[in-house]
Image (cartoon, rainbow, N blue to C red; front, side, top):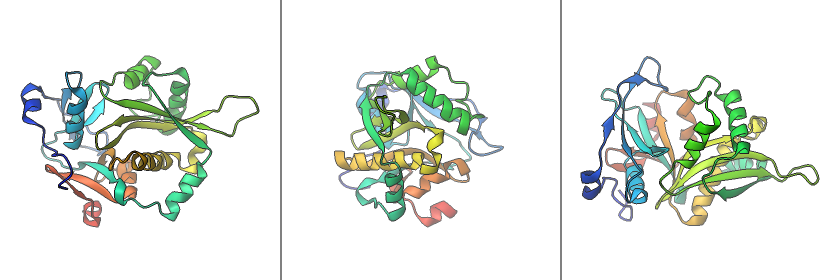
Length: 259
C-alpha cells in the first residue's frame, strides 16, 4: 500500500455502527452455471460520504443507497479495479478515441433524472443490452437510480456541437459518477448507439481519467473486473490498473489476466 493512501480497512467506529447483510445465492450474471452472493449495507446513514469513501477503497460498489460487494465462498473471480491516473499514458490509440469524440462536450449536472436522459438510456439498452436486467427499466426506476444517492454524485452529460442551425445540442452520452476523496467512481454510463464506431464507451472512461487528472485525483474506479467474463474483459485495456488483493491494492499483471 502506498504511504500516502488511506487504509482500505474500515475504521472501527464505522464497523460498530454498520449492519451488513448477506444475499441468498442467485445466478451469476457474469459466469455461466455459477451462483453469486453479495454482502451489502445501507449508505443512507450519518457521515455517508466518508463511509462510502472507505467502503469503495474496500472493494464495495454503490447502487442507489446500497453499497455491495461479492461474497462468493468458492469463487474469487470478481476483483475491484481502478485506473492509476498518475501513471496513465494517452497512447496513440487512446488519443485517436479522444479525437473521434472531440465534438462532445462534458457538463456536470445535479442528480435529477430527465426524460431526455431516459430516452437515450432506453435506446442504448434496446440496442446493446436488450436481454439484460435493466432492459425493462421504467422512468421511475431510472429516477431512483440517478437521484437516490446519499453521497457526492454527479451526472455528466455529453452533448455534440454538431447540430442543425438554431437547435439545442444533442445529448449523446451520460455518466453517473461518484466523487470520492481519492478519485472518481463510474457507477453507470450510456451513449447513443449511432456513435458506436467512435468507441464512446472507451471515450467516457478516458475522459474521466482526464478529468481526474485535472482535479488532482489519483484514481478512476471501474467496479469489478471478472476473470473469465467476456463482458468485463474491456476493463483490462486501461492499464496501469490496480486490483484489490485482500486489504491492499496492487498493480494488475499479465499473470492476473491470463491465470
